[in-house]
Image (cartoon, rainbow, N blue to C red):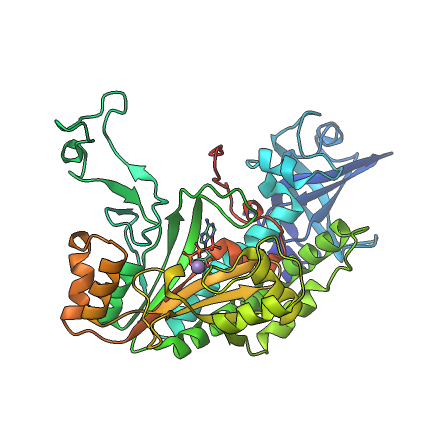
Length: 471
Ligand code: ATP
Ligand code: MN
């Protein structure tokens, strides 16, 4: 007999049929003459109740089962007598794939998220993480659907690169050199000509520059891949390895770029509501429970998200944002000041308290931003845009790109950047240049926003952060 997914059993409600299901035990209760076994198989949020009677073969095996064990049951689907489920199974036989004992870490009692991070190999079996990672799956599917429907091509930009695109120096080096015996030049410098690529190489911090090459030929592309940043940021919004979606589009200005970003974020939310309503409900319940006794009143997360789908994103300039922050009367850890990057506390104030929803901030001071952003005529600001959302802060960073060769060169000179390694990037401006724009959405940041999870480590399967690369 073929195994049926629990989600399909709930969907088709095959009352009277013999069915085989398999999964991991969430709870087990033995009464006189029968047992209730509740399992989940990861196919949906719901758990499935199985009733095993003592006249069943192997009944003794069933009564000795513990939480976490992996079991397979065959039986008849019947209308449920009890509350909480419409149907259940009257078991006729069981196969026990894997038992557990009392040391199984995920017992019924509530466990903290910190503890579950230490049990990252088991947390996919919890209600909470099942919800988070099913939402993650659907938001990945939403991403491909959204861009593909709009004529974008999916681009696999390289993960190994010799270019420091952001100029931030927060890259992981990649080498095959013997670290105990590094080849050195006469001057005592590392001799990278002896290294695998014959020059220093890194893990990518972005796929944007390669994305630009393809936009300048295929029109519109998007990347969706892993990104690595060796920044020493131990915060609830930074990972050393995270996933980023980076659309890059020819003939698009900042205005169109901001529209694209807003449409994409709204699409992600509406897709999650469509494909994972039970997961979102379950997450909401979790947050409401976790917020019990909290000082601040808990907002209805789903209602707030739902509103975003049909709303316009607010749009302000960086200069205006600084004005709002300075006039707010709020005591920030870092006083807002024109010319300095917005801090998370500033971003969250704008999105959470002031606009009470997503806001797109444009035209940042050029000294805060990367060399490739298109310069405004004021000589001070660039055509940058960040999308800020409540609860998280920045989830998107993007810009219109500088398409003028001369201005790009001047900017690189001002920033003391080496031009030689970027000859191909500069070539794009020499041969058939075009106005173009793009952005990067941090997938885990977007997931934090939609799932309401407070720590980015809880929306990626196995988080990598400074001093932590377990599992
Ligand atoms: P922040 O200022 O919040 O550290 P950033 O300005 O360095 O972010 P960008 O270079 O603009 O980030 O990257 C684009 C997007 O990638 C960001 O908007 C964010 O969503 C995501 N992102 C950046 N760094 C990280 C990180 N370390 N972990 C997870 N997501 C990140
Ligand atoms: Mn940014």
